Image 1: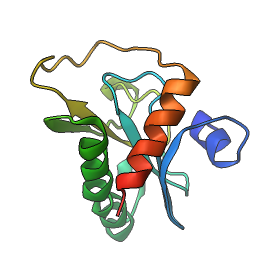
Image 2: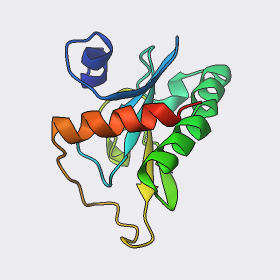
Image 3: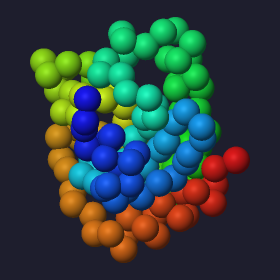
Image 4: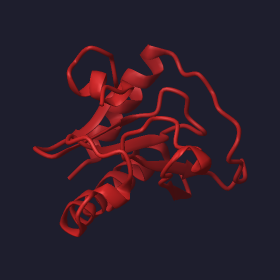
Length: 135
């Protein structure tokens, strides 16, 4: 199935990558809930997490701490939330498995519904900063 994420993986659509390995990528959300909001996705297309075998799910989630730590370091966030939706009724907008890493700041509170539109220069600078903390 061709999705926005498929287009990003094929290089047809721009994304601000913060992590890549053979099976996964992570990039900044184009419409972030807060500064540093990122998505972790498998390169192989799965619409829902229930379409994946347990090893693939484990491999996907195993890189989340590394990426989350880099986001926390780069942004100075106090905490983070994880989100993973499956199906339209769960508000999965892109039908490709993805994990949201959403930085949280004590000074801002926790609001799930607000979205911002960041410009490419801001996203490029932030992606570079986060990449520098990925170990």
